[in-house]
Length: 95
Image 1: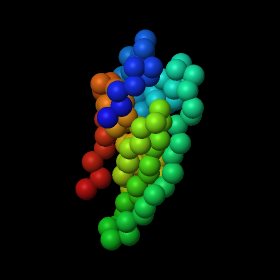
Image 2 (image 1 turned 90 degrees about the vertical axis):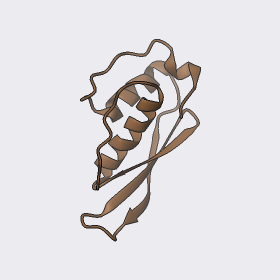
Image 3 (image 1 turned 30 degrees about the horizontal axis):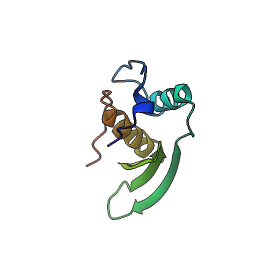
Image 4 (image 1 turned 180 degrees about the vertical axis):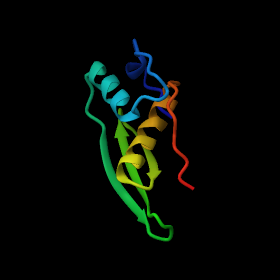
């Protein structure tokens, strides 16, 4: 996942229940890097409620998160990045 040494220097510890989007934003701000970019890449209408897929690009890494809302999908994508940095963040199961 994300193995960028520049992202992992002096990381703050976060509560596992904290909003992963805010945690990631704080890390990128301290790193003085390019802000994270979120974009909806797909909406699966085969399920109700619909499943949205959001692509997150940060520090030249790209992950996709899924959720029943855009907010939930963004949080799951950010949690994947944080987990790649070996920080604990909860990813919500959507099925």
